[in-house]
Image (cartoon, rainbow, N blue to C red; front, side, top):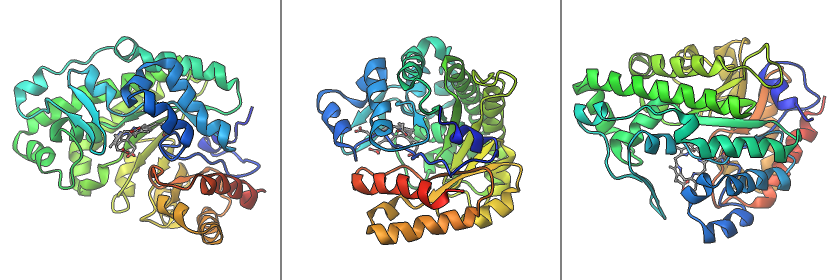
Length: 350
Ligand code: CP3
Protein backbone atom coordinates (compact mmCIF):
# COMPACT_ATOMS: atom_id res chain seq x y z
CA UNK A 1 0.00 0.00 0.00
CA UNK A 2 1.25 3.48 -0.90
CA UNK A 3 0.98 5.30 2.44
CA UNK A 4 3.22 8.31 1.82
CA UNK A 5 0.19 10.62 1.86
CA UNK A 6 -0.95 9.41 5.33
CA UNK A 7 2.64 9.49 6.58
CA UNK A 8 2.99 13.10 5.45
CA UNK A 9 -0.31 13.98 7.18
CA UNK A 10 1.33 12.75 10.39
CA UNK A 11 4.65 14.55 9.62
CA UNK A 12 6.54 11.28 9.28
CA UNK A 13 9.43 10.91 6.79
CA UNK A 14 8.56 9.78 3.25
CA UNK A 15 10.55 8.53 0.21
CA UNK A 16 9.24 11.41 -1.91
CA UNK A 17 6.59 14.14 -1.57
CA UNK A 18 3.03 12.84 -1.92
CA UNK A 19 0.77 14.62 -4.42
CA UNK A 20 -2.97 14.78 -5.09
CA UNK A 21 -5.04 17.54 -6.68
CA UNK A 22 -8.16 19.21 -5.40
CA UNK A 23 -11.01 18.47 -7.84
CA UNK A 24 -8.83 15.82 -9.46
CA UNK A 25 -11.94 14.15 -10.87
CA UNK A 26 -13.72 16.45 -13.29
CA UNK A 27 -14.21 18.07 -16.63
CA UNK A 28 -10.55 18.33 -17.69
CA UNK A 29 -10.69 14.52 -18.15
CA UNK A 30 -12.43 13.15 -21.27
CA UNK A 31 -13.55 10.06 -19.30
CA UNK A 32 -15.48 12.36 -16.95
CA UNK A 33 -16.99 14.47 -19.76
CA UNK A 34 -18.19 11.28 -21.48
CA UNK A 35 -20.03 10.14 -18.34
CA UNK A 36 -21.47 13.64 -17.87
CA UNK A 37 -23.14 13.43 -21.31
CA UNK A 38 -25.41 10.74 -19.84
CA UNK A 39 -25.81 11.88 -16.21
CA UNK A 40 -26.16 15.09 -14.22
CA UNK A 41 -23.60 15.76 -11.52
CA UNK A 42 -26.17 15.02 -8.80
CA UNK A 43 -27.04 11.69 -10.46
CA UNK A 44 -23.37 10.72 -10.41
CA UNK A 45 -23.00 11.72 -6.77
CA UNK A 46 -26.16 9.84 -5.73
CA UNK A 47 -25.36 6.63 -7.63
CA UNK A 48 -22.52 4.94 -5.68
CA UNK A 49 -21.29 2.89 -8.67
CA UNK A 50 -20.96 6.03 -10.80
CA UNK A 51 -19.38 8.04 -7.98
CA UNK A 52 -16.77 5.29 -7.56
CA UNK A 53 -16.15 5.15 -11.31
CA UNK A 54 -15.38 8.89 -11.32
CA UNK A 55 -13.30 8.66 -8.12
CA UNK A 56 -11.11 6.07 -9.86
CA UNK A 57 -10.63 7.98 -13.16
CA UNK A 58 -7.74 10.23 -12.02
CA UNK A 59 -6.20 7.47 -9.85
CA UNK A 60 -6.08 5.17 -12.89
CA UNK A 61 -4.78 7.88 -15.23
CA UNK A 62 -2.04 9.42 -13.04
CA UNK A 63 0.38 8.28 -10.34
CA UNK A 64 -1.52 10.12 -7.57
CA UNK A 65 -0.88 9.37 -3.89
CA UNK A 66 -4.51 9.71 -2.75
CA UNK A 67 -8.05 9.34 -4.07
CA UNK A 68 -10.86 11.70 -3.05
CA UNK A 69 -14.41 10.44 -2.98
CA UNK A 70 -16.54 11.97 -5.75
CA UNK A 71 -19.19 14.16 -4.13
CA UNK A 72 -19.73 17.88 -3.63
CA UNK A 73 -19.88 20.23 -0.66
CA UNK A 74 -23.55 21.11 -1.28
CA UNK A 75 -25.64 17.89 -0.92
CA UNK A 76 -25.59 18.25 2.91
CA UNK A 77 -27.53 21.52 2.44
CA UNK A 78 -30.09 19.60 0.39
CA UNK A 79 -30.36 17.05 3.23
CA UNK A 80 -31.03 19.95 5.61
CA UNK A 81 -34.02 21.10 3.53
CA UNK A 82 -32.64 23.38 0.81
CA UNK A 83 -33.47 22.86 -2.84
CA UNK A 84 -30.23 22.41 -4.81
CA UNK A 85 -29.69 22.43 -8.56
CA UNK A 86 -26.53 22.58 -10.67
CA UNK A 87 -27.27 24.70 -13.72
CA UNK A 88 -24.96 24.24 -16.70
CA UNK A 89 -22.74 27.25 -17.21
CA UNK A 90 -23.99 28.92 -14.02
CA UNK A 91 -22.93 26.61 -11.22
CA UNK A 92 -24.92 25.65 -8.14
CA UNK A 93 -28.23 27.36 -7.31
CA UNK A 94 -30.28 27.10 -4.10
CA UNK A 95 -33.89 27.87 -4.95
CA UNK A 96 -35.02 28.59 -1.36
CA UNK A 97 -32.09 30.48 0.21
CA UNK A 98 -32.06 31.37 3.91
CA UNK A 99 -33.04 34.98 4.55
CA UNK A 100 -34.92 35.25 7.87
CA UNK A 101 -34.87 33.64 11.31
CA UNK A 102 -37.79 31.35 10.46
CA UNK A 103 -35.81 29.88 7.52
CA UNK A 104 -32.95 28.96 9.86
CA UNK A 105 -35.34 27.59 12.50
CA UNK A 106 -36.88 25.30 9.86
CA UNK A 107 -33.50 23.79 8.86
CA UNK A 108 -33.19 20.11 9.76
CA UNK A 109 -30.03 18.44 11.07
CA UNK A 110 -30.53 14.88 9.83
CA UNK A 111 -28.23 11.91 10.43
CA UNK A 112 -25.85 11.88 7.42
CA UNK A 113 -25.62 8.08 7.62
CA UNK A 114 -29.20 8.06 6.33
CA UNK A 115 -29.70 11.35 4.47
CA UNK A 116 -26.33 11.09 2.67
CA UNK A 117 -26.14 7.29 2.62
CA UNK A 118 -25.17 7.35 -1.09
CA UNK A 119 -21.80 8.92 -0.22
CA UNK A 120 -21.22 6.48 2.65
CA UNK A 121 -21.94 3.59 0.26
CA UNK A 122 -19.64 5.13 -2.39
CA UNK A 123 -16.85 5.31 0.23
CA UNK A 124 -17.31 1.62 1.16
CA UNK A 125 -17.27 0.61 -2.53
CA UNK A 126 -14.31 2.87 -3.36
CA UNK A 127 -12.21 1.34 -0.56
CA UNK A 128 -12.91 -2.10 -2.01
CA UNK A 129 -12.09 -0.91 -5.55
CA UNK A 130 -8.87 0.83 -4.44
CA UNK A 131 -7.82 -2.33 -2.59
CA UNK A 132 -5.10 -0.49 -0.67
CA UNK A 133 -3.48 1.16 -3.73
CA UNK A 134 -3.78 4.66 -2.25
CA UNK A 135 -5.72 6.08 0.71
CA UNK A 136 -9.20 7.56 0.25
CA UNK A 137 -10.04 11.11 1.35
CA UNK A 138 -13.54 12.12 2.49
CA UNK A 139 -14.54 15.79 2.68
CA UNK A 140 -17.07 18.41 3.64
CA UNK A 141 -17.58 22.13 3.14
CA UNK A 142 -16.87 24.17 6.28
CA UNK A 143 -19.77 25.89 8.09
CA UNK A 144 -18.89 29.39 6.79
CA UNK A 145 -18.55 28.34 3.14
CA UNK A 146 -21.80 26.34 3.35
CA UNK A 147 -23.59 29.25 5.06
CA UNK A 148 -22.57 31.56 2.23
CA UNK A 149 -24.15 29.25 -0.40
CA UNK A 150 -27.25 28.74 1.76
CA UNK A 151 -27.77 32.48 2.25
CA UNK A 152 -26.66 33.85 -1.14
CA UNK A 153 -28.38 31.04 -3.06
CA UNK A 154 -25.26 30.55 -5.20
CA UNK A 155 -21.82 31.98 -5.81
CA UNK A 156 -21.09 35.57 -4.80
CA UNK A 157 -18.24 38.07 -5.03
CA UNK A 158 -19.22 40.47 -2.26
CA UNK A 159 -20.90 38.21 0.33
CA UNK A 160 -23.35 41.08 0.99
CA UNK A 161 -26.29 38.87 2.04
CA UNK A 162 -24.10 36.57 4.15
CA UNK A 163 -22.38 39.41 6.03
CA UNK A 164 -25.63 41.37 6.33
CA UNK A 165 -27.25 38.44 8.12
CA UNK A 166 -24.13 38.08 10.28
CA UNK A 167 -24.10 41.76 11.28
CA UNK A 168 -27.86 42.43 11.49
CA UNK A 169 -29.17 39.16 12.96
CA UNK A 170 -26.26 37.74 14.98
CA UNK A 171 -28.50 35.34 16.92
CA UNK A 172 -29.86 33.87 13.70
CA UNK A 173 -26.30 33.65 12.35
CA UNK A 174 -25.06 31.73 15.39
CA UNK A 175 -28.08 29.40 15.29
CA UNK A 176 -27.38 28.64 11.63
CA UNK A 177 -23.67 28.07 12.20
CA UNK A 178 -24.43 25.83 15.19
CA UNK A 179 -26.63 23.62 13.01
CA UNK A 180 -24.02 23.55 10.23
CA UNK A 181 -21.21 22.67 12.67
CA UNK A 182 -23.21 19.68 13.93
CA UNK A 183 -24.09 18.55 10.40
CA UNK A 184 -20.53 18.94 9.09
CA UNK A 185 -18.92 17.24 12.11
CA UNK A 186 -21.28 14.27 11.93
CA UNK A 187 -20.92 14.06 8.13
CA UNK A 188 -17.11 13.89 8.38
CA UNK A 189 -17.28 11.36 11.19
CA UNK A 190 -19.70 9.18 9.24
CA UNK A 191 -17.33 9.24 6.24
CA UNK A 192 -14.44 8.07 8.44
CA UNK A 193 -16.62 5.29 9.82
CA UNK A 194 -17.53 4.27 6.26
CA UNK A 195 -13.79 3.99 5.42
CA UNK A 196 -12.38 7.43 4.56
CA UNK A 197 -8.74 7.44 5.73
CA UNK A 198 -8.31 11.22 5.82
CA UNK A 199 -10.83 14.08 5.84
CA UNK A 200 -10.64 17.53 4.24
CA UNK A 201 -12.65 20.50 5.41
CA UNK A 202 -13.06 22.98 2.50
CA UNK A 203 -13.46 26.54 3.76
CA UNK A 204 -13.08 27.88 0.24
CA UNK A 205 -14.47 31.33 1.05
CA UNK A 206 -13.00 31.90 4.56
CA UNK A 207 -10.75 34.56 3.03
CA UNK A 208 -13.80 36.78 2.43
CA UNK A 209 -13.80 37.53 6.17
CA UNK A 210 -11.53 39.88 8.11
CA UNK A 211 -9.41 38.00 10.67
CA UNK A 212 -11.55 39.46 13.50
CA UNK A 213 -14.82 38.40 11.83
CA UNK A 214 -13.39 34.97 11.04
CA UNK A 215 -12.47 34.52 14.69
CA UNK A 216 -15.88 35.63 15.95
CA UNK A 217 -18.32 34.28 13.36
CA UNK A 218 -16.69 31.22 11.79
CA UNK A 219 -13.79 29.79 13.82
CA UNK A 220 -15.80 28.31 16.74
CA UNK A 221 -17.95 26.32 14.31
CA UNK A 222 -15.07 25.00 12.18
CA UNK A 223 -13.31 24.06 15.40
CA UNK A 224 -16.31 22.11 16.67
CA UNK A 225 -16.75 20.30 13.32
CA UNK A 226 -13.04 19.38 13.25
CA UNK A 227 -13.13 18.16 16.85
CA UNK A 228 -16.13 15.93 16.11
CA UNK A 229 -14.35 14.56 13.01
CA UNK A 230 -11.19 13.87 15.01
CA UNK A 231 -13.08 11.65 17.44
CA UNK A 232 -13.51 9.11 14.63
CA UNK A 233 -11.06 6.25 14.95
CA UNK A 234 -8.79 5.39 12.03
CA UNK A 235 -9.39 2.01 10.39
CA UNK A 236 -5.62 1.78 9.76
CA UNK A 237 -4.40 2.75 13.23
CA UNK A 238 -7.36 2.53 15.59
CA UNK A 239 -5.36 4.28 18.32
CA UNK A 240 -4.99 7.48 16.29
CA UNK A 241 -7.71 9.67 14.81
CA UNK A 242 -8.22 10.10 11.09
CA UNK A 243 -6.08 13.08 9.94
CA UNK A 244 -8.00 16.24 9.08
CA UNK A 245 -6.85 18.68 6.38
CA UNK A 246 -8.16 22.19 6.99
CA UNK A 247 -8.14 24.09 3.70
CA UNK A 248 -9.01 27.69 2.90
CA UNK A 249 -8.23 30.22 0.20
CA UNK A 250 -7.36 33.87 0.73
CA UNK A 251 -6.22 33.03 4.26
CA UNK A 252 -2.72 34.56 4.00
CA UNK A 253 -3.78 37.48 6.21
CA UNK A 254 -5.01 35.19 8.96
CA UNK A 255 -3.08 31.91 8.87
CA UNK A 256 -2.45 31.97 12.63
CA UNK A 257 -6.17 32.38 13.39
CA UNK A 258 -7.17 29.84 10.73
CA UNK A 259 -4.87 27.28 12.36
CA UNK A 260 -6.54 27.86 15.74
CA UNK A 261 -9.68 26.21 14.36
CA UNK A 262 -7.68 23.00 14.09
CA UNK A 263 -6.53 20.44 11.56
CA UNK A 264 -3.51 18.10 11.36
CA UNK A 265 -2.72 19.61 7.95
CA UNK A 266 -3.33 23.22 6.87
CA UNK A 267 -4.06 23.75 3.16
CA UNK A 268 -2.90 27.08 1.72
CA UNK A 269 -3.37 28.77 -1.65
CA UNK A 270 -0.67 30.30 -3.89
CA UNK A 271 -1.14 33.87 -2.68
CA UNK A 272 1.35 33.17 0.11
CA UNK A 273 4.90 31.77 -0.13
CA UNK A 274 4.83 28.23 1.26
CA UNK A 275 7.97 28.85 3.38
CA UNK A 276 6.41 31.99 4.81
CA UNK A 277 3.13 30.19 5.55
CA UNK A 278 4.97 27.33 7.24
CA UNK A 279 7.06 29.68 9.38
CA UNK A 280 3.86 31.36 10.60
CA UNK A 281 1.97 28.09 11.13
CA UNK A 282 4.81 26.47 13.10
CA UNK A 283 6.17 22.96 12.78
CA UNK A 284 3.41 21.19 14.73
CA UNK A 285 1.20 20.97 11.61
CA UNK A 286 1.66 19.50 8.15
CA UNK A 287 1.15 21.83 5.16
CA UNK A 288 -0.65 21.15 1.87
CA UNK A 289 -0.19 23.22 -1.25
CA UNK A 290 0.29 25.43 -3.06
CA UNK A 291 0.85 25.64 -6.82
CA UNK A 292 -1.33 28.13 -8.71
CA UNK A 293 -3.81 25.95 -10.71
CA UNK A 294 -3.11 28.17 -13.74
CA UNK A 295 0.58 27.11 -13.64
CA UNK A 296 -0.68 23.93 -15.36
CA UNK A 297 -1.32 26.07 -18.47
CA UNK A 298 2.37 27.01 -18.70
CA UNK A 299 4.79 25.14 -21.01
CA UNK A 300 6.37 22.10 -19.29
CA UNK A 301 9.79 23.73 -18.57
CA UNK A 302 8.05 26.70 -16.93
CA UNK A 303 5.74 24.35 -14.97
CA UNK A 304 8.82 22.45 -13.83
CA UNK A 305 10.43 25.65 -12.57
CA UNK A 306 7.32 26.49 -10.56
CA UNK A 307 7.07 23.00 -9.07
CA UNK A 308 10.73 23.17 -8.03
CA UNK A 309 10.05 26.53 -6.36
CA UNK A 310 7.23 25.04 -4.26
CA UNK A 311 9.40 22.05 -3.34
CA UNK A 312 12.33 24.33 -2.48
CA UNK A 313 10.09 26.29 -0.11
CA UNK A 314 8.96 23.07 1.58
CA UNK A 315 12.69 22.27 1.81
CA UNK A 316 12.25 18.56 2.56
CA UNK A 317 10.47 19.23 5.87
CA UNK A 318 8.37 16.23 6.94
CA UNK A 319 4.69 16.94 6.47
CA UNK A 320 4.50 18.51 3.01
CA UNK A 321 1.67 17.33 0.78
CA UNK A 322 1.94 18.74 -2.74
CA UNK A 323 -1.34 20.08 -4.13
CA UNK A 324 -2.68 23.04 -6.07
CA UNK A 325 -3.71 26.11 -4.10
CA UNK A 326 -7.32 25.55 -5.23
CA UNK A 327 -9.24 23.18 -7.50
CA UNK A 328 -7.97 22.16 -10.93
CA UNK A 329 -9.67 24.11 -13.75
CA UNK A 330 -11.86 22.43 -16.41
CA UNK A 331 -9.68 23.65 -19.34
CA UNK A 332 -6.45 22.22 -17.88
CA UNK A 333 -4.33 20.23 -20.40
CA UNK A 334 -4.47 16.63 -19.22
CA UNK A 335 -0.84 15.84 -20.30
CA UNK A 336 0.37 18.59 -18.00
CA UNK A 337 -1.41 16.96 -15.06
CA UNK A 338 0.37 13.66 -15.76
CA UNK A 339 3.69 15.52 -16.08
CA UNK A 340 3.09 17.44 -12.84
CA UNK A 341 2.45 14.32 -10.75
CA UNK A 342 5.57 12.60 -12.09
CA UNK A 343 7.81 15.65 -11.69
CA UNK A 344 6.76 16.11 -8.04
CA UNK A 345 7.83 12.53 -7.31
CA UNK A 346 11.09 12.74 -9.29
CA UNK A 347 12.18 16.14 -8.06
CA UNK A 348 11.47 15.34 -4.40
CA UNK A 349 13.00 11.83 -4.29
CA UNK A 350 15.03 11.62 -1.05
O1 CP3 B 1 -11.84 16.74 -5.70
C1 CP3 B 1 -12.56 15.90 -6.28
O2 CP3 B 1 -12.23 15.33 -7.33
C2 CP3 B 1 -13.87 15.49 -5.62
C3 CP3 B 1 -14.99 16.16 -6.13
C4 CP3 B 1 -15.39 17.57 -5.72
C5 CP3 B 1 -16.38 18.28 -6.45
N1 CP3 B 1 -16.66 19.41 -5.79
C6 CP3 B 1 -17.04 17.80 -7.68
C7 CP3 B 1 -17.62 18.80 -8.60
C8 CP3 B 1 -15.02 18.38 -4.64
C9 CP3 B 1 -13.97 18.14 -3.58
C10 CP3 B 1 -15.85 19.54 -4.68
C11 CP3 B 1 -15.81 20.60 -3.67
C12 CP3 B 1 -16.53 21.86 -3.89
N2 CP3 B 1 -17.72 22.06 -4.53
C13 CP3 B 1 -16.11 23.10 -3.39
C14 CP3 B 1 -14.90 23.32 -2.54
C15 CP3 B 1 -13.66 23.34 -3.35
C16 CP3 B 1 -13.49 24.58 -4.18
O3 CP3 B 1 -13.30 24.43 -5.38
O4 CP3 B 1 -13.51 25.66 -3.58
C17 CP3 B 1 -17.05 24.07 -3.79
C18 CP3 B 1 -17.01 25.56 -3.49
C19 CP3 B 1 -18.08 23.39 -4.50
C20 CP3 B 1 -19.32 23.97 -5.04
C21 CP3 B 1 -19.43 23.75 -6.48
N3 CP3 B 1 -19.65 22.53 -7.08
C22 CP3 B 1 -19.36 24.73 -7.50
C23 CP3 B 1 -19.12 26.21 -7.27
C24 CP3 B 1 -19.57 24.06 -8.70
C25 CP3 B 1 -19.74 24.67 -10.07
C26 CP3 B 1 -18.54 25.38 -10.52
C27 CP3 B 1 -17.80 24.54 -11.49
O5 CP3 B 1 -16.63 24.25 -11.24
O6 CP3 B 1 -18.42 24.21 -12.50
C28 CP3 B 1 -19.70 22.68 -8.43
C29 CP3 B 1 -19.90 21.57 -9.40
C30 CP3 B 1 -18.89 20.48 -9.39
N4 CP3 B 1 -18.53 19.77 -8.26
C31 CP3 B 1 -18.17 19.94 -10.48
C32 CP3 B 1 -17.38 18.89 -10.00
C33 CP3 B 1 -16.48 17.99 -10.79
C34 CP3 B 1 -18.29 20.41 -11.93
C35 CP3 B 1 -19.69 20.24 -12.38
C36 CP3 B 1 -19.91 19.45 -13.64
O7 CP3 B 1 -19.50 18.28 -13.77
O8 CP3 B 1 -20.60 20.01 -14.50
